Image 1 (cartoon, rainbow, N blue to C red):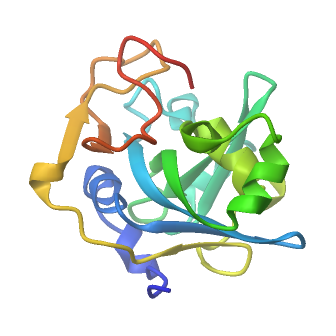
Image 2 (spheres, rainbow, N blue to C red):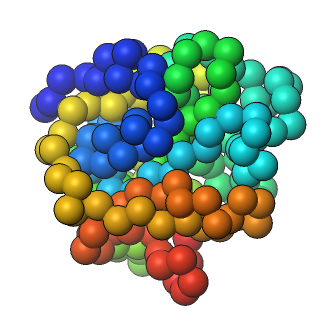
Length: 200
């Protein structure tokens, strides 16, 4: 397994972190076991001036982790159905984060299958932010945790060259939807969807 990415990896511009998380490994450790996936798609949310970032509402009980130390998890519930996992970036007090939108299963695939249901397999296990959280067993109990130890860690993976990366506008949002802050590994079958069609 690759080394765990240190806190200072995240203490940089959010766009840089979002791009460099591609190829890294998101690992979840629960009482059921370990499961992990290679990050193939991310989105950057860049602070209070970003209308699509939760920090646009200011500091609240929900958004407090965004204002915390870089390299911390920010896990939230959306649509009353799905959990989403983010990595907090930049220095403390500058709220921003990278949403992990899709991973390629790496380890614990049988565990992922059990969590998602036997009728769900292949790319549908983890090709979306809610799907990957369900597969990895990520929920609200994992909010505001350091990503360097314990239940959630991000490990160094393979280096992804610039010519392997596509940058597009973010998807699944209505505010600042034209900002080009979505990063993905070109050709990955596990990317959540195109900008226009598909499902999350």
